[in-house]
Image (cartoon, rainbow, N blue to C red; front, side, top):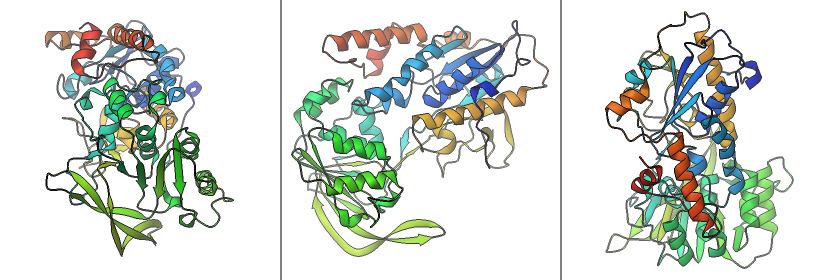
Length: 464
């Protein structure tokens, strides 16, 4: 189904909501999709509304804070735009509030006219091979959360010491980020907002060699040309690409990522941590020592076949072992189920027709419930991809309200319910206290910020 992607100027539903009884919308999840949706609503001409932003974390911005690599300061600047939305007097932030724990979906729906789910994809996919739970193996979801100061992953202790050889499994932008962050010189890391514990660990331990493994070919890799180009231009790294693994026309074809790979393949070897990009290679097993620690990976060469219009990797008889003391799997994200919310467990998304959430058994739409971002379409695209997705969801939401008789009485207040239950809500002012505290501590160290990376320190800085 093709979904029309409206411009913000197209969304004008002045008849919805009144000054005395404004439209009430709850947005669950405050990553890019959630903030783009809130931005679209606040810019709609003549629309009287109130927006409640609900997030299980005490901090807003989702992957902008917890997923973007610490050395990508330019990408993080979009948070400045989101901050203007959060500070809008028509918008309230309810941080440290989890749907399904602190309140039910039904209770939230009772308190607003529409609910938009933009909870992202915070779980990781597994490879499903023997040895995947050995000491020395972790998912990119966990590793990225650890070095970005996500409180769910503050206790991670990746085995960086005594790990001269590292394998990163995956061929997307996250895999490239992980390989790059692992190998960055300490001086580069010290000028970023990387989490304090990660800064200490990464600064003390630099791998001797990093292997980036993709099960399919270079032409099927999911990373962008910009990410490949940056990897090749990062000081202190030596990127290796075997030109025999690239298509014959890689240097002259239309695919920009392939052209960047061809440029790397033609470059002479340089000094720095060697990062090798391998294609058509899969991990068939992780091998441990007598103490349950990772010591090697068993690899298999793949052949490529086209099946039903898709290029698939078929294992061959060519196998070998490679020493490895740390492995990070970056093979995709998936959403997680929330009590009371329809969920497609196979795909890891909220089932929807366009942005309208539907019951998976009957296909019937759930009145007043919408979704956008990764939890709707799966983990694809970059931050900006979520903007048209969010705009389409807002357009659907407002279209469904046109012509409906507006209620006169105000709904029960969400803040009152959470207060009665003793929930330690982080509102926008409390988040600004966290933000100011982090920036002040970072400035003392010559860094953009020093992140609070545990639930206790975040709530303490918030003053709640």
